[in-house]
Picture (cartoon, rainbow, N blue to C red):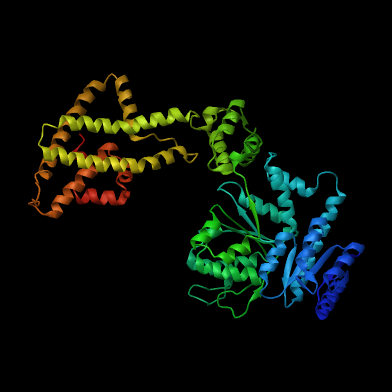
Length: 571
């Protein structure tokens, strides 16, 4: 059966050129010069696809795009004059299949027609098959889930796959943006081409232009051979720009031109090369807010955000967690070459549905991988999941008690030393306020790390709880008494040493300057703060550095400079 097309344009020469090109491709075409004539042709005949100009004598081609898209699934492409990209983007949003710029380039026109023919062939295969099409089977096998939010998402993906419009995928980290992008490519007429994913935040800014557009031999130091860029590698296929918000502004300008003109120029080359690619982009950041803040170009935002597809979080589709867990366990069994796939118990499955997945689907898979590793049998129970208790109120109360425990100890020590002079007490109080403010600053960060741990890391409690566990362990140990007496004597000795050092620092009165100079006075103050932080963390330098708001290397350097040694305070 001969393929037929409708060509709509008010330029007679251009219509004749397109009609000759289509005839050479074996396509019969009718030509309409006005919007009313095009509507008449469309009502009286059945066409496989349509090419229309946007500016017609008696109306806009956007009206024809809207009417055809709403009444049928026939691919319709638009022809735009140079500089009218905004109208082309509007046409894509209304349902246009693709667009081609004037002056018309015949290779670009042939490529557009071939893509339209692939869509037609794909639609014919879908109609000829039974209830479930191959595209639907592929979609269901790759995008797991049958909840209420997944049905419209799958239908939208099928529609987007037929189009050539740029798609922007938005959603939190771990929601499966790359999975959806690859699905759109595999379901589209470009499935035979390459799918080239690239993480924009992982490429150094100095190499970004070379990575995207390629370079010629000798164009810069180290360019020992010609290199194809990502745009050339994706020619005829799809280029997926992941974390597009991390692109520097200088690169955004060059990317904008490549998307708009569909041509790229390699570094060191003298001519531009046309490329036929479809742009898919994604980020977990609020791109609209970045545009308002000036961190992302507005014109590039409208080029890549022709159609936005927002992916739901895992918490919004909790009904899909059991089937997702089963799917991941099957994949893990295949990858790890297990004889039988692990099975979740009913309690473990319910616990997963009650969990707040901050990392979404990616976090679910990590939790299951850890559970398979820890489980000794084929069955996975709640204890193997390693998830925190659901009783959040009790957990916060315990955490609050643990946070307040150091303050109680410090207040007790402070009351014992009130026999010293008023200046010493004031010095101690000031230093404790500094440490307490550090604790309050670091506490939210410690809490966040505790509640959002990597699945392979163990849940580390706050410092006071470790001390408490150590004391309870000592109480059960019969040899604890002797060791406790020895530790008490060491503690008393360090307290006396600390009191002597504070007495030196507190001799200053109002209007009096330090006798040994400002540098020595500040070093002694710094030394006391570091020692206090080290004692709070049982001489764990990494945790002490976090309390002080510095790095481990900086803390180690300061300890060496101030001659602070661990053996001075421990037996």
